[in-house]
Image 1 (tube, rainbow, N blue to C red):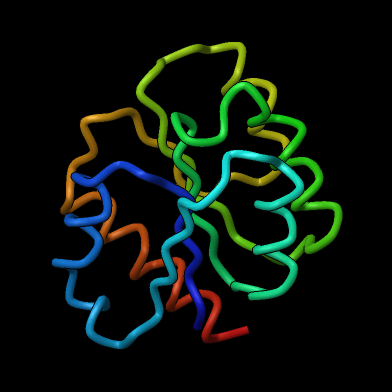
Image 2 (image 1 turned 180 degrees about the vertical axis):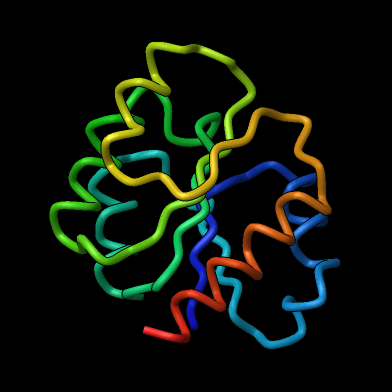
Length: 125
């Protein structure tokens, strides 16, 4: 399954690359443009089954971007990572079906367990 990762956070990228599933070549990292249309284009063209979104990379367009992505691809699973514990943003995006929400610094074990769980569920469908 393709996993698109939208981030320029070098620590997060390194963490994901160290995970056991990284060797399967599923991760595709995107950090070329902060423009919502460019990000939407990447998501539409690569058609990932799972999307990891770093709020630090996409803000202030987080909520509209995630809503657009879910509108175009309602079956995409989203993992959301932020460095800000803003409750309002959490309330705004939670109806979109965010499968895992984490605040930086991210715990590698928790993120990997969530990824593996989501992948098992997606593969059963």
